[in-house]
Amino acid sequence: MTLLTTSHIELDDSGRAWVAGTRVKVLEIVLDHVAYGFSPAEIHLQHPHLSLAQIHAALSYYYDHQVQLDVEMQRQSDEAARLRDQDRDSPGRRRLRAQGLLP
Image 1 (cartoon, rainbow, N blue to C red):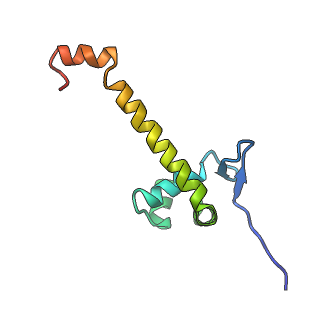
Image 2 (cartoon, helix red, strand yellow):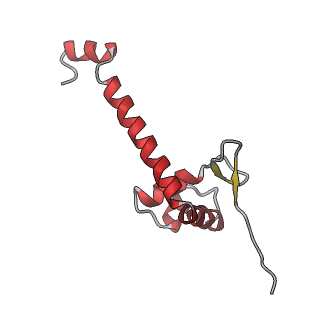
């Protein structure tokens, strides 16, 4: 028996997974699937430049590295929340609140 492998995933120097030959991170496809519940076909509608094989490969990579990618998604979510909280008291927001344009 011959083992065949097809790889649609490549890692950059930081160890971040990308769909090979594209500018799409595996994590972007995973977020479409996990956060929005999109099926591979629905993800294909959002990313028509990707083949279904590439999308399935990205999801396969996710399931092979789920703990690591879940930790990264949580880290990014926490960072976004921190930045949102930090931005709530920015000079621009203070001006808008003073003008009654923000609560």
